[in-house]
Image (cartoon, rainbow, N blue to C red; front, side):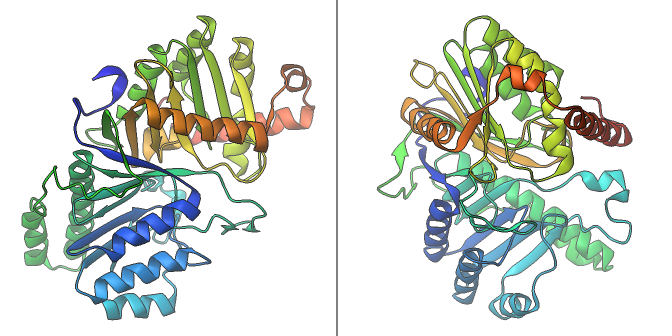
Length: 412
C-alpha cells in the first residue's frame, strides 16, 4: 500500500472526522449507549469536569445493563479517581485500571517516562475511535482552568478491518495490566487465567460495519501503533515515507513539535524540491520544555521555504497531517502521536492513516481554516531577531530534552 498505511485494497472502512470534544463526545456516547457486549476505552487524560462527566455517565449506563466496560488511564495524565465516581463505577461494574502508576519515586525513574498516550475506544468489536482527544472538555484545562475558545484537536470514528487491530491492541494491554496486578497480589491462578483469556476476541464480522449515515466509505485506511517492543518506529516511518512521496503539498498540525534529524531533513528536502510545506504548531504557552524546545528548529525549516503558523486562538492539541489531498495518492493521518521524542521514542501511541481524497480534503479544509482564523504566521525576520531571553529559554528547554533522552538511553 502506498506511502505508509497498513491496510490494502478497498477494505470496507467507513471513516468520519471528528473535531474537538463537541463532535467526539456525542459520537462516542452514542456508540457506548448502543453497546451490547463490550466497551474498551484507553485515554491519557480522563477528566470529569464539564462534558467529560457525560462520557463517565455513558460508561455507567453501559455497565449497568451488563456490558463489559473496561477503562485504562495513564498514571501521569489522569489523577486519582474522584470518590463519587469511584463509588458509582464500582456499583455499576465499570472496571478502571491505571497504566504504570508512579509509586513513591514518581518520574524520577526514567523507565516510568514510557506513558500510555494513545486514545482508543472499541465498542463491541465493530466500531473504533482513535485520535488525539482525551476525555477532557474542550473549554477546560486541568492546569490553566476555563478556556475562552475550544482547544483544536481531532479524532476519527471508524468501522472496517482496522477495528480488529484496535480490538486486539486494547485487549493485549488490558490483560497485561491485569496479569501484573494479579501477580503483585500473589493471585497466580488468576494471572494464568488472564493470560489464557488474552487470545480470546469477540466474534467480529468485517461486513457488519454499522456505519452511521454521516460516515463515508474510504478507499484505504489502517491503524498504526507505536510501542516499545515490535512497533518502535512505525508511525515515524509512515510520516517519512509520505513526506518523501509528496508532490504538491504537505500540511502538518502538531501540538508538540521537535522532529528528529531524519524527519527534519525529509521536510526540508520536500520544500526544496518545490512542495508547499505548511506547519501549524503550538502558539499558546502550555509547558516550558515542549513550548520552548521546538523553536530552535524553526530557522532551518524556514530557510528551506517551510511555512510555520502558530495557533493562538486556544491550545493546539492536534496530531494530524494531510499530504497531496487533491492528487491521485492522497494521504492523511489522525492520531495521538506528536512529532517529538516523547511520542516517537517513549509513549504508546495510535494513529489512523487514511488514503482517500474526500477525507483528506475535509481535514485539509479544517486545518486551513485554523491557519487563517486562529493563527499567526511566523515571520523569518522576527524569528531571527527574537530577544536574547527567549533564545536562552529555548536552549535551556532543548538541553533539558536532550538530557532526559540521555537518561533513557535513547538517541534522537
